[in-house]
Length: 335
View (cartoon, one colour):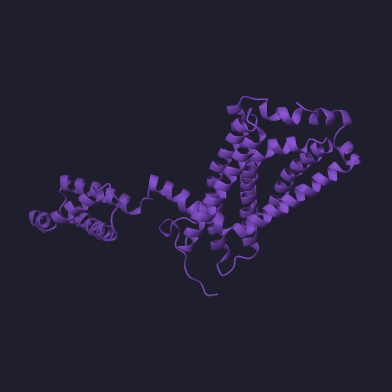
């Protein structure tokens, strides 16, 4: 085999492969197919040269070209700002909207449970005595007591960061523990409801419920919504273990697990907003009506975001999962 003839016959293919490998923008479908074909051909050319025409310079060039082409063909797709924008405008709201039949009942039932605990504590002095001594309860519920100073006892920025961290941990627990049939999720959720119910009940017994609600509502609406969403998604993940539907249990858990991970990342931003409200708005000198209005506005904005963008995304077939191209291939199985 003549080396000059071989190079003349194939150098245009090598140059084209070099061009495709060095291209920064995303390749079109036809260009990607061409890249794969040229990569395979060049690999064959390199093998032939190594066995019959050992030209060091040419072999070095083709070895480098094949290595870079292989990386281009097999490497994972890099995330971009477009992926981030798509996540917050499509994937996250679609996931929350799709799973609304899990987190909305969770929110309603949880609110009822917290209210029942509050009524039980407020109307039973023996229950209050079991919680703390009367002097301690008076200290907590009096004007300027622990329930009020809690929100202004630390600098706003550090308090907001602490609140965000604590809430993010609760949300993460709900999502991670969902795989254990959802039972630990119920326990984490109950602990949060118990704390809220006790506070409502004790402040109500001191005739200061309006003060407590004025401190809770500004940040609590959005914060609790995030917790309810996380709990609902966690319970859905647990139910998938029991009933995966038409999918295999492995495929169902993979899909719902990816969705839960995406919801966790989205809720981190939601909790950042609620933490900022709790750190800067709740303890501020604004009138109670203004602080509540800010909390209600934040809650309505989140619900509108989910129902407008989420409904639009689900109507186009998006479930909140990652793109098909980024998933592992699934082999169809007979039912």
